[in-house]
Image 1 (tube, rainbow, N blue to C red):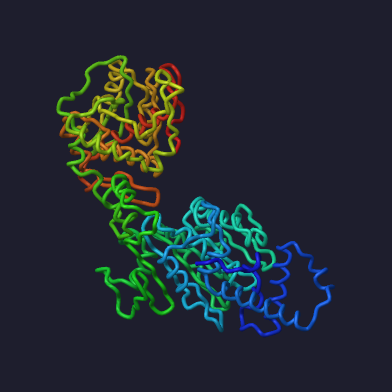
Image 2: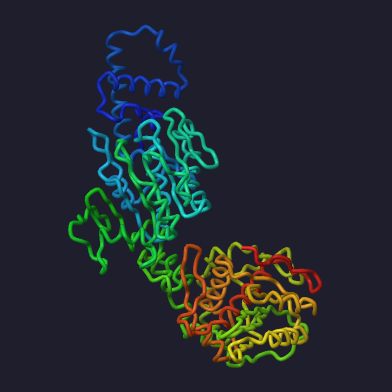
Length: 595
């Protein structure tokens, strides 16, 4: 779309008269403001312009020019797409936004006001699409358009999310960047850490989290809910109940941008979804389909796409993501489909590709640096101890497939792993070579032991003796353990000089070491000797998804997964150490488990 010639600050001109159709007098007043802004932009003095002698013909000509400018500004103000493309600058490119066709259709249908009343057709709006389809940008554009251009004085905009980090890092941060990059807005807005204010209109955009009391009593013009699928707690439900539209303002709309959720758990989002689609994901009666993936029912508008393809989404990128996610994760994140929160962690075929039949447990190697992890229990369940080391070999069965992956320049896409800064080992340091990344990490299992309790109670003496034995067989870098049941044992082992390190199984840690193990297995960077008990523990594990990611859980109550958990912890400890400078045998490793 060609950019319309208009005043630099026309994005906010006319805000005080939008509640009714403009009178000729008001139209002329706005035209004079627009003309003055245009002249100032050209470097002309308004006062000097007023003193110049003019004829009646010149005045009439100027009046017509001014009216054309006002009509152009009015047209932009009543079209969210035109307003976006003329006034908003994409901070990533430094150029005006170029919206893809589905975005344009959605924005115009959802936010174009009635030309007479200037009210919106919908007060409940949803935009749901797969990853990297511009959900955050669409939410930011709608928020800025409603508050800066279409809303009345004292308009209130809120960005609601499950956590302050989420609201600050996504929609609000995107609004912040757009305002700073767009001259039409940065001249009329004040940006603070937790708010964007428009002083001339006494309007604002603020973040709000699951502390519902911080939003109570507001008169929201627009509320943007970011990733509603994750609003599962009681506090999150209360926030949703507090942030509702109000009938006393001309414009009040609740706008949700989100992926699909988990069936039976993402109750808020599922309730909205079921108003449009039935259990078989077919369109409900009374729903009008306005276009591909665009549906309306009463005052509710929903865009729900599984396959929308903006220009930047390529087949190659999608296949890269397919390798990074489990099937359930890929279906939800990359295809925007509802899934169960519990899914298979690893397929047996994937694990078997990592088994090297020629590999055996290592009996003794005093100079071999190893990482050990313990997943302990008190009664009934088993206790597992798994030891791993860095690996530089490849199995013959995997080599051809690994070569194929490398040829495709497969990037490591897991954000939790990317957080770990990659540094070289001291002995391998070379200024001329880039440091290794965690995508280069290869691990092999050196030894494992599963202790099944007698009479339902574990004998911790077995754990102590076994770990002390490991320190005599290998150079043990550290022994990771969860302190929940292991504090006394860890203290005793520490007195023997065993480098014990707490790895509390918090949500963040559990997600981190689960993702490390899944990546190593699916990318065939883990080498395991044949061991049916270890294999069974891994296959007994399921992946439980939440807003942070996936963590290991039991597939059934009777299934044992202790060795899988210990293997994941050991691989994570190895990965963390691999990503740091070599501390040396006698130096403490420190808090290598900070996430």
